[in-house]
Image 1 (tube, rainbow, N blue to C red):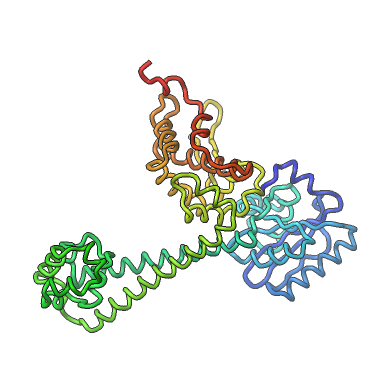
Image 2: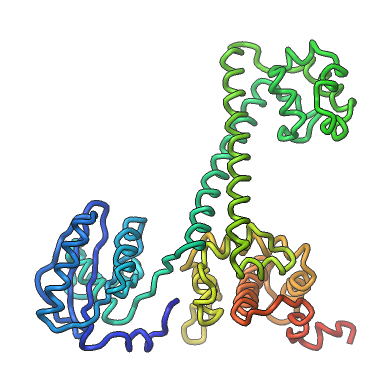
Length: 430
């Protein structure tokens, strides 16, 4: 995905027209120059619409013809989501090379030209073009086909999970107000049998009027086997001593029914998304390879692919690590050696998915559990628990890249044999 500096510079020739675009919600501003920084024509301000894009392309064609340029590289900042429409539009025409520049770079060099803190759309467009000229750009990871579907599914699932958690908290709040004693019978309110009971009787003042046997018989046979009569008896006993609010119950009932309907709706929608994701992943070799690694399920595998896209396009595992923001950086000066940290300049959702995956794998995956113990107990350069997890995230990305690019199955024993531990770790009693 990201080219090395020299490879990027080689993309820029005397026949290259460099265009920088400052992105906004309603309109964009563009400026053009060559690899020496000489500007061509006037800047253009065009609407964020098809007519605006056509006007922009006409402007480029005029400059190409006047300056005898045969290729165009267009740079922009990937801030917010407004850049996606024009980036995809220009990419689909196949007449342009689309690249992105780091917004932090734009901010830092803003004063180099005129020693002025002023920010304008025209100035930013010029700075973006200059960053492209200096080969300080990246190729954006614009996904296509199943990969874009997976990313959209992942984003939608995240939204629904947040809404689900918000609804859970609201139901918990309701129970604290109207039936706080339910915990004497149930550890958590999400038990299917408790939801069945509370939907029918709503308040403890109603539950206390019903015999435990009647409530027990009301439950479906499968629920009865998992609950038991004694738990129902404890629930009825708790309802008789409830301190729950007993006023304004008509709207409290409406509130609970509304919240439970939302809760069950989110669960169903998330299940539908997961089923669709599983179906999508069945056609991707990447996820098939990943789930061979113990501790990685289809949801985790699909999340990794949704963030990275087609892993076969990455030349080496370092590019995956950089995409995740897991590249190691060090702050040192003279004799002072600073701490080594991760860059965090990458896709934060990818870091989150990897981190959560490793947390599970150090409990269930023999190889990763052994490596975690080694990192946290070795005599030299011992890592903290969090540092060890980061190291294993990087290791996991290297494994994923290898098995996918080499089209080989994951072999835990082979991976373990390739790790070279120090002698003192292998023979601690020596």
